[in-house]
Image (cartoon, rainbow, N blue to C red; front, side, top):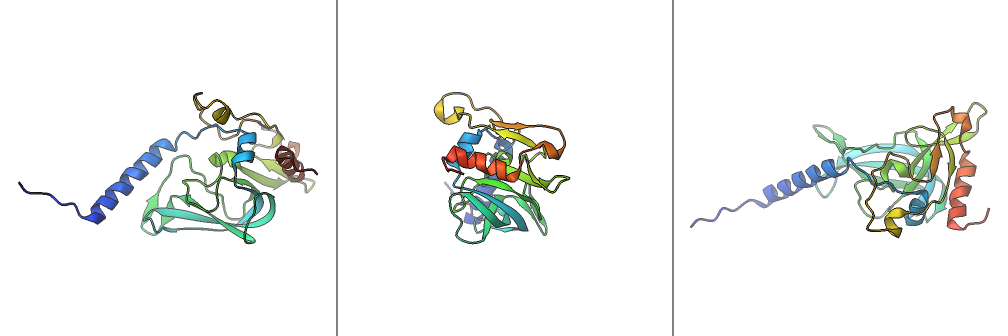
Length: 211
């Protein structure tokens, strides 16, 4: 009886294909998180501006997109250098493209407040709750920086509602709408939102940090 041997590179290619198929299928539904959960579970929360976005092949053979932030303020955790690089799975390089469903990459020049689940290990999306952990900063007509959701809706308030995922682990996870539980947003003009300073202080309050 003959034995069929599959080359190692073919096995690796098959594994990566199955991995990407699983990612594409599973990432279409991101679990809803809460402000309290994001604040408690994120390794680093920071204000920053995107200064570079570049896609390349990783050492694992997948396409990844590196987003480089100039860190302006650290709300939680520590950042070893003034610039922080977060790696997102997927992207486009010459002759190849890897699309990840529900993935929105921070854009060059974007300024915001980011909840990073981890900065020292690869994740599909390093932001906690994906878009839920990404808040944009825009100046209003008076020059005040206001906070918006990743979907560009002004944030009116954030409340430290409990995490149903950790407190009741057997409860069914709810799919995210792109906004964390405890974030109150509006479709009104940007002038209506919290200022960057107000938003950051609310997060520090949840962390128990005095003004």
